[in-house]
Length: 415
Image (tube, rainbow, N blue to C red):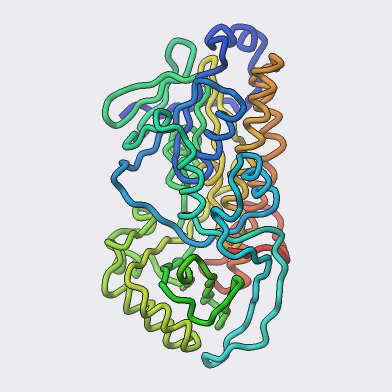
């Protein structure tokens, strides 16, 4: 494996010589852009770049094309919905029920308490629906699957990506949008490591709607437990948050949390099923417990924290590399900011790149401005997650890296 690229300085504004010379490495039709990651943020970046007229864009995804992927509930704010509208993706393509309501209710002795209605400024979907809506629009010759990045070096005044199969690819700009297990973060910002927060999101889907619900429901039986469920096409999708020690996680899913950031159905042991079923029977009203018990294919993810980022942009020779979305700052699902951060950052990035290509704006300056506009929101979301978790009794007590205590937002927790 190539040695990780590391920069000792933190100033992302290139010096005058750097700014003057770098344009000679680009073709007249714009920079060569490599987008790493085929989940949500990566395809969004690729589509926005294509729509804006960038001619040299390639999307690299580590997962082989033959692998079937899926994901659970996510919430999209109006800002993200507007960006998807701009891409020509109709909401009815990925939003099953046009609800703006979250019902939050306590549960006592398996009986629902009085629910509180909360308005959410957006819509609810699933990772699977949105991923399909995005990826089906990307030209086939732009996508390279099974392309796992293992290194990033400077070569010939530009960035050079190194892949696990031995090939290399040059780029003027590398956009790492490769999720919370980001290779880009490990290469560019290796001091920021994921750490287990002390609880797990168990999730699954059923082919029936257990209560005929038309909105997102959040059940809170007590400290250390939260159950979210919402309607999806032909059924319902649920996520059950439960406190879990690292040893319990390893016993249930075959590896430690930091080594298995996603437990696919093949990793879910009988012990894991029994653990979740037992908590469902003990804490949830019958319709919800039945939905959990009837779920055959299940998945899980350990909730992870990370130190807030200090930057988003790194110079690589006369080129640049950037982190965005979960690659930059994976956040707890309760913040409802994961997908929204990534989509908003993607849109801002392409706006900055358009100023460079169309109006000869200095690329380093444009990227520095993009970082200044989006970094604060990413930092705030990282800090908000542990504060919400502490209020719910989920996981370990928050450590915010010396920052002030964060007051959970009324709108937070839409996932």
